Amino acid sequence: MRFVLKTRYAQDVDFFKHNGQRFWYGLLGLFVFVAPFLLDDFYTGELSLVFIYAIAGIGLMLLVGYTGLVSLGHAAFLAIGAYAHAYFMTEGAPFMVSLIGATAVCVVIGAIVGIPSLRMTGIYLAVATLAFAQIVEKVLAHWESVTGGHRGMAVPEPEIFSWSLGTPRAFYFLVLLVLIGALFCALNLLRSPTGRAMIAIRDSEISAQAMGINLARVKTTSFAVSAGFTGLAGGLLAHKIGYLAPDAFTILISIQLLLMVVVGGLGSMHGVIYGAVFIGLLPQGIAFLRESLPAGIGQIPGLEPGIFGLILVLFLVYEPLGIFGRWIKIRLFFSEFPLYRKSTYKRQKSYLRTERVH
Amino acid sequence: MLAADNVSISFGGVHAVRDVSFEVAAGQVYSIIGPNGAGKTTLFNLVSRLYDVDAGSITFDGEPITRVPPHQVAERGIARTFQNTELFEHETVLKNLLIGHHVHRQTALWEELLFLPKVREQDLVFRQQVEDVIDLLDLQSYRDQIIGNLPYGVRKMVEIARALCLGPRLILLDEPSSGLNPEETEDLSFWIEDINEELDITVVMVEHDMNLVNQVSDRVLVLADGVVIAVGTPNEIQGHPDVLRAYLGD
Image 1 (cartoon, rainbow over the protein chains, first blue to last red):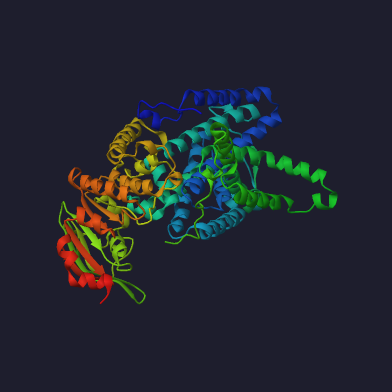
Image 2: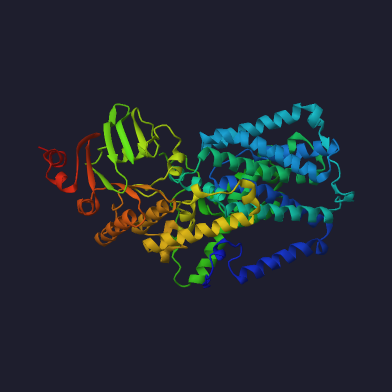
């Protein structure tokens, strides 16, 4: 077991708690920077997709895992980000300006969507955001002058100062840098008063209020920031897809995003990364499953959403803290061995609190 | 300092609090006692604006707080604890206490996203102040523990600590001794005196433990069925016939 000797208060503020962490995260950083030189273009592309999911997941995690508000409509923010970015670029805005613009659009819309969250929580909010996502999908399909309707819309090549980022490797580095920036901002937020206020609201609204936290303000902020991150991911995703159509952003994507944060582990940024890797691998896993199952079962339409749902339910029942939670338990088991107590992580309260009425 | 003027609230047909008036002077320890269901906690919830009064008004430092939004009550300097503890379960003691500093934040969202030096300095100041409160209430050994793992008595103290982090001028304690063992209750009485005298915070508490009430209170208010039946010093209250009747029946 490691005991960290604290001699300065700054140690409670810093990201890394001890040198062991610095070493391992440094190694991880090194790996992701050399990875595209070791992998071929296909896997580099897949890894960029995982990173894009992770950026969207950061947004959703802030909302679901830290503020305790469930959204089943985050595909809509992904879509708005993607379309807004593609539209701004088609209109001639430079890449960075367009990406920031798309993020800003999502922040504003997120703040507006957040308003109902002041009155609704849990399952009711999930349904409201689901409805919002449906509306956005319809708008995208019918607002032809901007989105091209069902015909879709082509996304221009990304370039910064006439330096093309179209190759998988260049695009990988772009996405990686955005991901690092997004993680940096999100973790900063979480060690600041606003982030702590979100956590307070998640764990007890009533005492958050008694601590002087303005529920309306913090919840809307959380929604706005969350939508911003997801919209940012949407802008990058637009380049990855290359051609936008409304059916790329269905309810299934929203569920996939929620699956990502739940499977990864609610209430931790590690969980976002684990979840994104999981979601990135899942389609391959399902494709493999389809082949190995007998044709009658393997070709059933709707197998994919079925499997998503099943995994979500299994995690909620058996490992509500997700992959990251499981990892923490394994680590604790070894560091406390042989004194590990199973009850340490016994669940006392759930994050979705429709059942708890004050 | 804190005054209520003919405050009433009813839930359906239940008149939880009826025409209650009281006045707490600055620097006092003011206890509210009464049998179960007398409306003591409801009175607290009215002060911290979790409920809207049906009639009457509440003032703090001469300013009406009857209609301000709940979070502003804390901003004005009223902190509170809850009967069954309402802590942030999934976080450490330290984080809980830092949340107590929320009303003192001076930073904007964008500054926090970038964690500018200003935000860091503010956090270090908060951290320092949290340590002072930890020192005062002897919570050193629990600093980095998750609330969910702590025994009930410690949670109670953490909740008081969190309320103190707000830097309040008035603190509302809702049954601070419930669930504590006699030894812890004894400690609590000293801490209440410390909070009152050293930190110069006015204390209003709902309490059942009469020893504790007699030991620390300057004034006692007795409620029964939502109505004030007596106000006075602990000694006056103990022999008051109406109080005995409320507790023991005729």
